[in-house]
Image 1 (tube, rainbow over the protein chains, first blue to last red):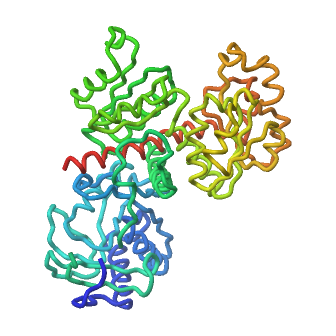
Image 2 (cartoon, one colour; image 1 turned 90 degrees about the horizontal axis):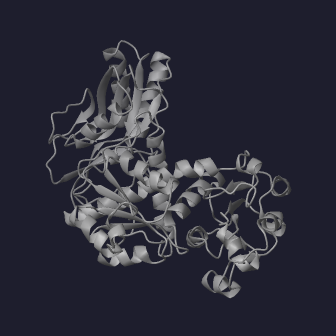
Image 3 (tube, each protein chain N blue to C red; image 1 turned 60 degrees about the vertical axis):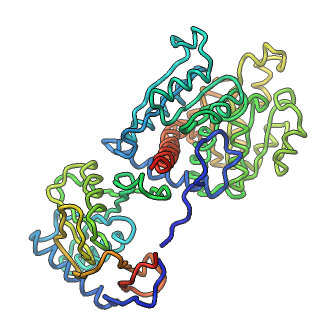
Amino acid sequence: MSATASEKEILNGDEIRRAITRIAHEIAERNEGVQQVLLVGIRRRGVPLASRIAAVLSNVEGVQVPVGELDITLYRDDLTLRATVPLVRTTRIDTDVTDRVVILVDDVLYTGRTVRAALDALVDLGRPARIQLAVLVDRGHRELPIRADFVGKNVPTSRDEVVEVRLSEVDAGEDRVLIAHSTR
Amino acid sequence: MTLPEPIRPTRRHVLDLDDFTRHEIETLLDTAVGMKEILSREIAQVPTLRGVSVVNMFYEDSTRTRISFELAAKALSANVVNFAARGSSVEKGESLLDTMRTLQALGADILVLRHSYAGTAHLLAQHFRGAIINAGDGSHAHPTQALLDLFTLRDKLGTLERRHIVIVGDILHSRVARSNLWGLTAMGAHVTLCAPPTLLGNEQFWLDTWPDLRIVYSLDAALQDADAVIVLRLQRERQEAGLLPSLREYAQFFALSQARLQAALTGMLVLHPGPLNEGVEIAPDVAVSAQSVIEEQVTNGVAVRMALLYHLALHLRQKGA
């Protein structure tokens, strides 16, 4: 998914930072503190976002909120529709999810199918008290009855556009969110 | 954002490791890391392979390999059927190919074959519409054992690149040794074979097939700089066939004893594909020592087989789609 001439920046580094800070505050407010909160990032870009939210919460609330990493590959509903077999990565959640308020974190909310898979993966690990969803970008076009509890930015898109989130932890260069026309 | 090709798209069967690239092995081992995490859960099951049918066709006795494949398939929610030659139509004279066609007509997607004749898995692969996994064919190949050895070694040593691995024992008759040689050399390890000449066979054959191989006839010398040693099972029939003067003499020169373990590098890993002949190829206290990873090999075997089933089953389904 290379950048094209029609690509447009919808969030820059500062805006991403502010969005994450606001989401962190909203999480603390909604849950009356963060004592029971466990942040779970959906691989890959949900993981650094979850860590950044945890860092803000540690500053603001003085609590080290645990962060886990969730791989949803084995729960996908499109495994047989894809051209190649997707790589399986490792789920790492060291805190028991049972009775926790689990905040699922992902970069982009689109069809909702990734979140559906994540919900299935999560409940196989235990019985959380509540599950909430935080995303950096909500681009619409849901195919399942799923909505986010915390949204960095709502971005109206068309289906032939691609939303690309770049985070310094996993991508070379600066933090930014781009929108581009699909090259395919 | 484009991920590397996970596994060769043309791979339908796993018959040996001779046609695996390093990248393909690494991909499988990486997948197995994720699978091992699943096995550590309270509910060690994911829904990925629902509706896929796996048949274990075992024409030769096996405990760990068969149960390992069965648990691996179940952990991925596949349907598993165990077929044992004993008590089946094989006793009425049904041929291997006829049995395979029957299982195919019954809807089997993946056949896991263990057979005492070399080449049987390759034969089935020529005729079966689904995927074949070779779970050991005669003295020829045992790719899943080799993959679980590679997984265990990589997990413990960090990498296999330039690590010294010794394989000791009945190499001539060992499918484990052969598949491991393909896998270990593909991963960049330095391999030393150690056996009495009667259990090694033609030295030139080994060196022609794997030119970087080292062959050493003294176990003490072979172990000097070893990071790990894979001890092979000695089959007692070998002595009856006249290849060994006595089991006691074999143990004297080729068993991994406590004394040999102590003389080796600190932390040298001890592997064994099982089942053990304690007191013959390995001393009982060595098998349960801190350096022994024999139990972990068994656990890792389930994860590695899950990784294989995942790749093969999805590839089959995708082609059908």
